[in-house]
Length: 244
Image (cartoon, rainbow, N blue to C red; front, side, top):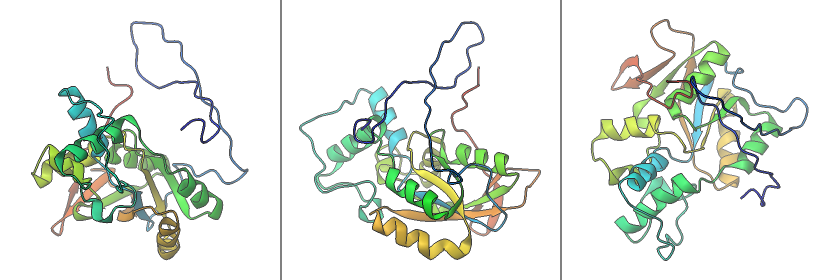
């Protein structure tokens, strides 16, 4: 994948290490002047969007920890997590779904083309990739932008692979918004750009879902969950780089 995009993979991460020395590398990139889409541009009234589905990577990790491994001879022919209708499991049943989940964790596919075009056109007001978990990464946007957010429970595109580990809707949602490592694009945009965004996603053969809206800051929660007409703080249990 690095070869396909002309990238030199150097390495690097951010983690706490209170009792030892850490020597790390920094990955440096570039973009066209004025075209960077940052975390701090979300405005009250913007809509919130996410590409693809969330939760499959977390399921893949869970399966790997339980002893499942990649089976190179098992293929999910014709199935794409990005474009398959409504996130249904691949043809072939459970075995292929297991392999799709594992591959979602080990070989994520970044939506480079869509992200690049969104930036060039100027459709997104803020953007981040889902690495720490959808809820956690949305809070990063809120913190940087000085806003709040409300997410609709039924709108979040939970990956079909989550059904491999739970049939409970609440548990599935929790795994999907907290699991992380999906590397889907989570972003905010002006409501009047809604049609343009969905047209762009379609041209990239990419599923796009509007999952909520940006609201003014709320002292009780940076991110809230709207479900069955009620709004309450969304529990955020994504990965914390600096937790000891």
